[in-house]
Length: 303
Image: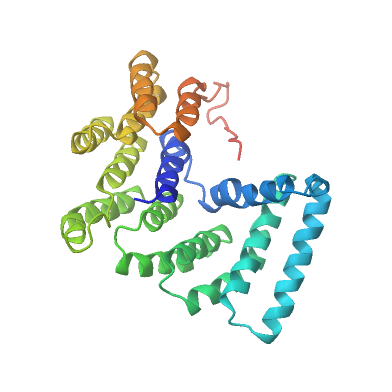
């Protein structure tokens, strides 16, 4: 699997899995894209040679707005230019990343990215990454059926596509349909041997098992969750993902002493670029609702 694919999986485990475990509906992965991809592009621009002045957010914004206008002018003459469309999508996502630093994003904020991205997907339906991103954006603006349709299209041709599976699970969890999410993952595992025979490595079974375990843990079926983590670990004892997932569940249950050696083991097995994230997950305090005299206390979760 590619390095970018591995990074995606780790973000899934460290971010989305944690949300699932504490009972928070899964947030659209587009927010992670803003944090991990677009935001990095903005930072890189600011740190590039001659970019000292661009470190000012207002100047970065002005530069990105100039880029957007330039792309739009080219598209007036060549509306199907895929390179320009990709540049426009990236620039608008970067603008969203800047805005996200100042205020909470709402559905309308994502709409300027939708139109060029829809054109890209129509022009190049084989680009599943763009299709998944479009689905995530559609979910962000409330078009869940449109999001599901794009994801189903991807999974019909690439049933093991990690990002598409994760996005579909996120969508189903947001709809409070955990059993549908479980069904999707179980079907993926059932088809994995044949899919991997046709195209080796096309389905990451360990990733699917871990995610399936996370959903069972979310439904308080901890025995089933641990069974899946153990099965994944037997497939590859040196893979840190199922170990980390089990550690997160134990920590959520308050079994800190049992979780500690698993976190340490996961950190030892993980590539260097993930160790800090794992150590942070090990030391962060588990937040629990504060009891109040009211029958149904309201809990506010940070975005």
